[in-house]
Structure formats: structure tokens, C-alpha cells
Length: 208
Image (cartoon, rainbow, N blue to C red; front, side, top):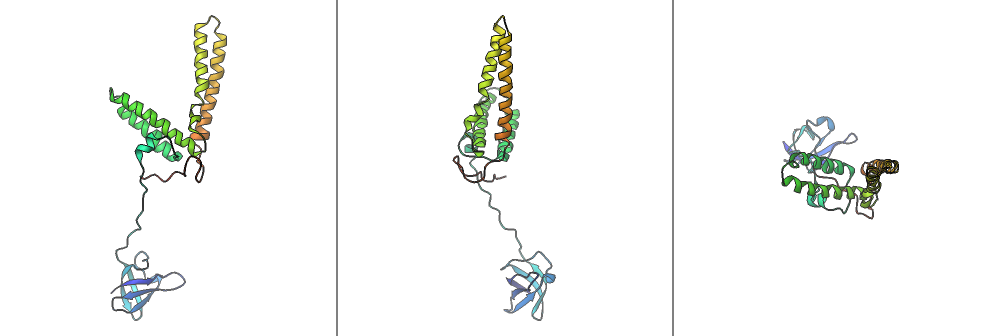
């Protein structure tokens, strides 16, 4: 016989099924022969007096999972908003690196693609900075000592006394290295802040 579940059974009480004969039948967890049905679920069972035996759920389906949509153009090209560290490394760094290997070597198209991915890399890095509560301009902080180190190298190569230039290049090169390591661990790898911040709401889950 077929029927519908009016009340689901648990360890403390029996469930109730309305049969197609308009009678009500009780069932327990030990009567189930399939996954536990939901309220309103259609079932097939063997009536035994006022009890239902060998209860099978019919048409049991998993609840639908809603996956949020994402504007991938804005993800790669807009520097506003926030992204999680998972999205940054998986859909940002890894995706850009892999696509560069595939397309970057092609004449003309490769150069155009490199320009586009360079901007995309900056845009997603800005959003990663935003996720930890920092301005995206922090990304360019290591460029200052790097530029001074290059100037020191030029001075060392053009001067008869290379010591001052070498010293300048060494000191500011170490500063550049330290700032770069700090940027990676304190911004790009660090877990983002919870809740909405001045740069926007917390990043949403990414569709697969």
C-alpha cells in the first residue's frame, strides 16, 4: 500500500502514515527499509492492523543546493570589494599562472594576454588586501626600497668607488625582501576579517 508521512518517527515516538485507504498507520524506525522519509514524503508499506511494516520512501531526493552566481569579469578586472584567500590563490594566482603558460607564448596574442593578466593580478591582490582590512596600495610598498636598491646598483656600476652604491643596493635590497615576505604572510596568506568592513561585505562562497 502507498501513503504519505504525516509525522516522522524518531527514537522517542512512532511516526504516522496516512494510507491510500484513508486509514492512519503507525511505524517505528525499525520498520524503515530505506532512508528516513520526510514529512509529506510518499512511501510504500505493508499494513499490519494499525501498524505499517517494511516502509520504503518513494522518490526520495536530496534538497536542492543553491550556488551563488559570480560576475567573473568583475572578479578579475575590478579592484573594489573583497575576496577570500582561497579564491585569491585558486582562481587568481593559479588560474592566471596556468593560462599564461598556455597562451603567453603566442605572438601578439600573448602580449595582449599578459597585459590583461597583469591588471587582473593587481585587481585581485587589491581585493585580497581589502579582505584583511588594508588598502590595496600596500602592495606597492616594497617597490620603494626596490627602486632605491636599483639606483644603488647603477651608482656602483658608474662610480670609481663602488662601495657606497653596493652598500645602498644591499641595505635596500634586504628591506625590499623583508617587506615582500611580510606582505605575503600578513596580507596575501592571512585569513580575512569576518563580517562587513569599510571595503565591503565578507566574500561569498565561490561557485564550482
